[in-house]
Length: 291
Ligand SMILES: [Fe+2]
Ligand SMILES: [Fe+2]
Image 1 (cartoon, protein in one colour):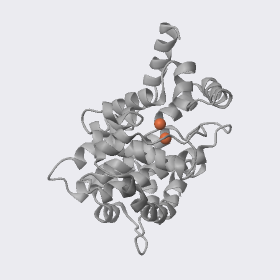
Image 2 (tube, protein in one colour; image 1 turned 180 degrees about the horizontal axis):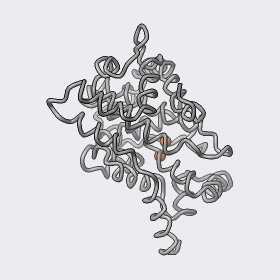
Image 3 (cartoon, helix red, strand yellow; image 1 turned 30 degrees about the vertical axis):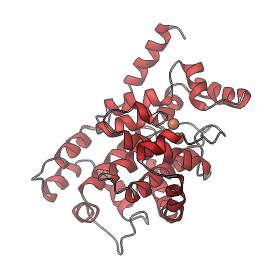
């Protein structure tokens, strides 16, 4: 790949729309120790599209609350600030990718993304991980680099899929061959641009080689393991038919035995059923017509 072509591609990636400034303000506020529900509500309420999506999310069976939650302050109290922060971030990031053309089956992609998020969450609880909410977001967004490829370079994307089929190679190898970079490098770049927490940036960048992470290897390793498991359980599709093998180094980083994975399966099944309603929130058509 010629350097100038690669540079032009990187420029187009950097030009992708950013998250609305309200989101940054709300995320910043959510980090303040003395923030009140009222102050936060008045900031988020400036963006009614996001408010309506948060309310739909909080009323979906993903959260399983009894009765209808009718306003944002109630949602903030019930969900907790971290969950709201992650919902706002996810909604606004996924909004950027709501229009990917009809040749791409975004449903299978989001199913893989949500599946990986849910498995991360289940494992995070079992491992007593302190920021399970961040783990869910890291799992949900781990392959976002693939969406950048589809959105900006659709022709390259179809060439990548062809390479995968014809040469029986992994999607990451095909991306490097066709595009000169892969979805993990693009994901890291986007997460940096979006100012996501450092550990989430790393998980996007190192979910295929978590031993290279510096800030939080355990998070990258959990996303790596969850991605493999999601593929093995045939939840959604990540672009190729290969089921990645679990590298023993990943288990060493997490300090677990293979038996740990078997112990998570029942919870994964249960959580996956509930999480499917999360999918409808991010479904392409739903995004275009918030109720
Ligand atoms: Fe990936
Ligand atoms: Fe994946």
